[in-house]
Image (cartoon, rainbow over all chains, first blue to last red; front, side, top):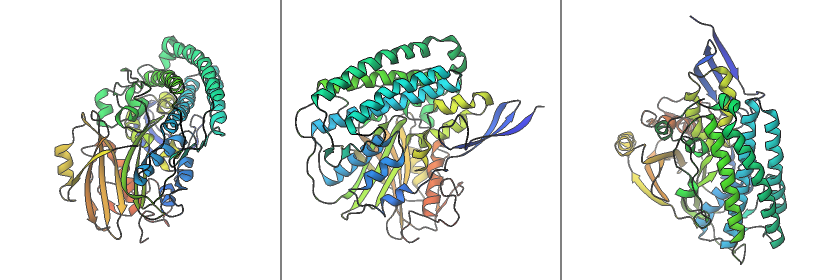
Length: 361
Length: 119
């Protein structure tokens, strides 16, 4: 016996930053079945990339798949196209790419954690998170000229250099941010009521994380030490001492903690990259047209992003395939709801930090 | 420069599920996605995997010369998260894939197989 109700969650919902629809079958407020629709913002990006744009301009299209992950898509595409053109970016450019990529990760993680805090009832913490994130947004604007669509990558290097003054400014601002982030980390780690709302919720075991091929902070919060930064050579992460951040609790709380640990680690990586920024050019010339195929894995803020590129020696590519992290995490998210309370649906969804613009492309 | 170490296993549509089943160990390998490429009237399908332990290592099970009217087998019984890529393959190339539904990304019935060159 029980009160069976079908509850729609999305596609437009106060807790959702992007459109996704979950249709929950509930019995006495416990979710018993879920239907999911992730395709609301499909824009035919892969089709446009092989029909409307020359390979030199495809990056502008791909970086607009998503505001948060624009640097990820720029990275996935450029590392692939440079392989097909047999061109290698200078070391200084690789370091600048790394710095921007990690700044992007910091602002994405800060907002994701702030969203979880908000739906757990901590509005002030949300505002604090967004306020701290502004430090990073200002740095990105300072370095690249833009707050969101950076377009710093170009084939063979980067568009803008980092001056000594800017490097000092980045260090000063990041040290300021680190203090703030550590305070918030301490809160997530020790606050009793935040723990009540997030600990033990939507638990993913290490075995399930592997079975469902979970990626990103969600996998690492379950003890699965997977990260494209360590598993694929695309930027000099080894040289700046990258280490995978993991927890083993596997719940909403652990996902927030892993993201917060990654923010702190990303700050350290950027500081080391700036201290060891190589001298030299930021761009090399290239010639030719892309021919052949290549496979690329890069680590987006939400996890592994996969790119497949195929060129046929013409100006237009034959195939561009993008597989983003949320796409990988949706199957387990769908399974996780079953058995949880409907009231926990919001923190569960937001602990996954889903990006539907990327998923639907 | 990136240097992916990709090992390609050429197989057939009849054998691919069995081949993946015999090879795949979820504790060692990470399923990445399924990718289709229109090679001019015929479809090429790649089932793509990565290695958790070996840097830059990727594995591809590849089937070429697939007709667009052939039933593509599903690997969702072996890899439960593979259903999304299978549904997408159906939408993008208008091919029948075992146990899939149309419409995960293409909602408009007037748009058929956007990644096929003949449509």
